[in-house]
Length: 243
Length: 59
Image 1 (spheres, rainbow over the protein chains, first blue to last red):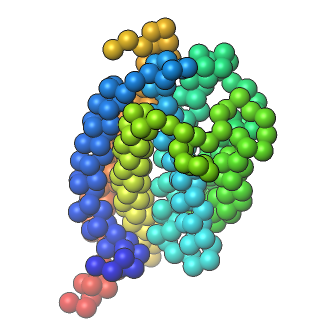
Image 2: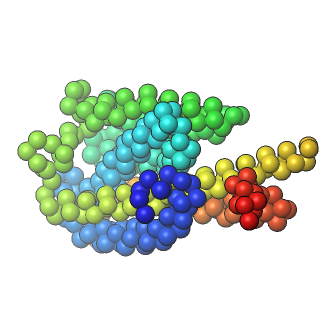
Image 3: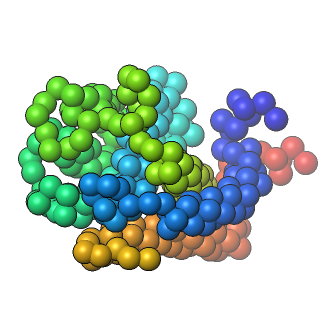
């Protein structure tokens, strides 16, 4: 099936029905494998066992930014081409991205206390991540409170595009400003600074979280398509009652 | 496995993650069954979407 066919909501529902069980099973298997690797991974020579928090903090940080990136691309589809499935994709990604950002903030705070001696500091990395979380809440508020869903979707799409400015700020915040947060140790010039005994479990967990994100996103998109069908059928029912 | 002296922070991190992910999974599962139930109720009352009507009319 050509990928363009998935832009049709009915075909997309068929695709999700076929793919979702496999995606969910792959997510569980990858998490089981990843957690086994995490349990067997050595402690960090400076941070001790608290490095175990990294295996959830880092993947959720990546995916919270990827989620916003997906919403920004979907926002273009909503505003430029007015494609309904783009709006469905953006709306479905928002609560998942918000949840991943929340996990990133909480685990970062719990990692910061034993490592830095504080749960929170208003530096560039932590603050820009908190701003991302607030932006997610703003998008959710626009989707959930707008009386006219179309206007809510357009407003959320504009916020998603404007908020994309925050993604490079998060990425480069540890390079341009003084911060307690460590600089990039994986995606940097000269290659990764992490030993393979810690890097491999991290990448497996990142794979597990990525599959989880897409599993939840496909399921949430399916639910949103059904919700829109319910809405249109209720409108038809109301029109018939008043005719 | 020895997490000391920071076991509380590590366990709390994993507990929060499991709780949030469980909440997300519960949200998509409950929402799916709710939408299916409402759609089923509407179809039982004879309400059809315009695209379904077009298919019926063609037949």
